Length: 323
Ligand SMILES: Cc1cc2nc3c(=O)[nH]c(=O)nc-3n(C[C@H](O)[C@H](O)[C@H](O)COP(=O)(O)O)c2cc1C
Image 1 (cartoon, rainbow, N blue to C red):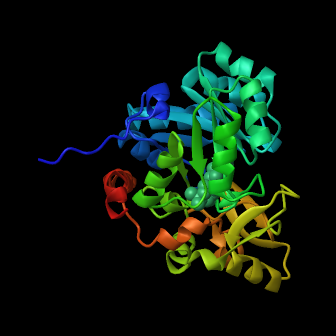
Image 2 (cartoon, protein in one colour):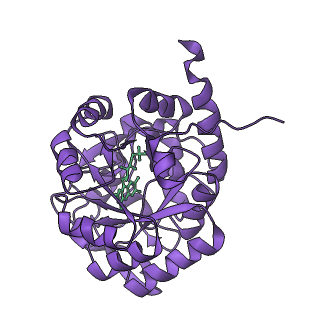
């Protein structure tokens, strides 16, 4: 019987996880089933909070807790912050995470007051230092290879070196990571874990629309671009998507390109909306925000999330055999 490598790190020790892998929070994609699957596999699952009421967030947290006894937390996008939801997340999960806004001491204190840890996803060494000063327990260094909204202007390796030099708290690496080799590389640099988004979009548990997943499977890093095109609801916020989605949206003239459901209610999707297509979305899927990191080059099949975690750990354990 083979024993799975565990790759213990400061991240696994701090959170009580067994794998140095964090699922990125992805609205519409990181379903309770996906969050639970990653947590059950020993990683840390992240539930997205944007556009949820406190009641809906609490129900989503309960849903994950019923499916998993593993570790999971909640992610907040600062432009859409709902303080009532932060209180729910801090009370009910061990990790509350923020992204896309200056680190705030008051928020960190509030979350600590409920006993949860605080993480901030950052795009520069200065922002990482500010997060540490604000009292955060860990930071995520996000390189420009990342899918979804991108905070900084530096790619992962140089950013990771700078962030590791700037803070003493554990650093999670994000952007472009999809294989065990990638995981081994960031751990070897000093990162305590890898945060992975795009690779987990192509999983059995993912909430992503099948046509979005198909487009990812067919794409490589060269098919992605960093743009501010999908700005309806969230202007001036660069994000990495499939270039084909920008081109398809540019060809359309209608203001509304489809419809989705949120909290059980139908919601129209405007042209260039930030909302990415989920299984509940109808309309011109190809012209919606098809977020994709450069990791899309190594996103080539749909598998159970637990399989991906297992493979990442096994490959990472052997990655330096070639050196
Ligand atoms: C579909 C999608 C949605 C995302 N949504 C969020 C989000 O709501 N909050 C957040 O902190 N990061 C979000 N991100 C960015 C991730 O946290 C992470 O930085 C990124 O996925 C890492 O790059 P990768 O996609 O190459 O793994 C999203 C990424 C993707 C692919």
